[in-house]
Length: 286
Image (tube, rainbow, N blue to C red):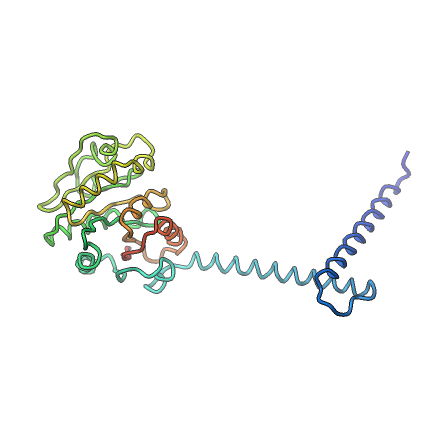
């Protein structure tokens, strides 16, 4: 039968042995790594060394925490001006614009001069989050291009939460999803120079449908019939679908709600970088 207190005393001796071993190992490591020069002659210097290492580790840990907190604050900081946008998304091809009619008309004019050239017709419109006004903005841009006398096709490629059929009050029975499933579809005529292809009825995984070769073939044919082909894509927060169109176009028009934090834009930038696509311009909504 164990005598009360014996086990506690044994545990205490074991703890002291472990501490001694740890101290010995620290001293050995210090001798191995320290530059040539005087070595600590006694345990007092060794204890001071151990204490110094502990303080150094604590300072590094506190520094790491401070850096992490600073990064989190920067990610949550709102984007208020063009400088913030350039810092977050990279320098765009064209200056940022507010979502006002006169500014959008000027943007369309500049896009015709600097983006829709040399046979390039495709431009996806993207956003970091849902609810930033992307769908309504794409519809407005399409109407402005048509009013300027430019043959325009708007494709609702948001197979996750389509909305262009509501913007133009057309049916959503047959559209892009049906075309990708090899069913015959026809874009709706929504003006003298404007056609709209709804999202259609998607029963499969959107990303799988959009990855089919039929999409590239369709967009190549559309680019020959229309000078401008605008693509309404799902928000980056909904999935990576936008990368497919950004990669095909080589660029994207970004819609960003004013005062929203930059965390979403940083995520969107990763999508665009993965697609090797640049920011063409930014429209500030809200």
